[in-house]
Amino acid sequence: SRIGTLEPLPGGYEDATIATAINRSGEIVGYEPFSSDPNNTFHAFLYSNGSIKDIHSASLFPAGTSAWGINGSGVVVGQGELNSWEFHAFLYSNGRMVDLGPPGAEQASAVAINDSGQVVGNFWGSSIGAGVFLYFNGKISYLGAPPSATPIAFAINSVGRIVGELYFTGAPSHAALYSNGIWTDLGAIPGAAGTHATGINTAGQVVGISVFPTTSYHPYRPGKHVGFIVRNGSPVDLNTLIASNSGFIITEATGINDSGDILCDATHSGGSTHAVLLTPK
Image: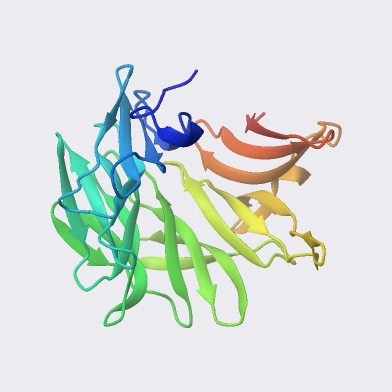
């Protein structure tokens, strides 16, 4: 079913709302990319109890906001644009949006929040470099990095374990896990140009996406995408774990719940793209 838009928009953009996350109560967050304010800025929204609410703060972020995560208490996190170059992480709770920074960051985004209120995000600053931050109980912590790698976070589970990606100079990226103060390299699908973890459940099961090199530039043909789950410390192509006659090719694994159900994108043998749910046997 449709959740609507924040307001009627000119130019045929009435359906231009993009959902990014949902909590266990069915509250949905995201952003509207074609707002009708004078600057046509992004507006973060919260859908709750059957209605959609604009939570954008023009005073804090005059160049726009987008929401990327929501926890079970309805606390929302995301990214707020200060201008065409600088953006900060934000937290929205009880009708109030707060600029989280973090200090020294010129570019930062909060990507996820768990039910304990732990917020994870990514940052860059000319004086502090790039990395991952954790916000909890009013305090910002920088999570460091393993040697010769730059981490980026995508998700956090209920006990504070974080998954994402490690970037290496001149080499394909690898999926990564942060737990107990340590980044662990989870490796990559062989042949992939980049591999990143997108979801982790309470038990620590990790899923993600591997992207393969572009096959042709003239004409342009992108490389294939493969969804994976981490088993025995390494990514395993989900296509090797489903029935060979399913009629689907799993291209992305975007999340996993505490029952082990995996939300995926898949290409049907007929060529169409579908959202699919993989349920463990």
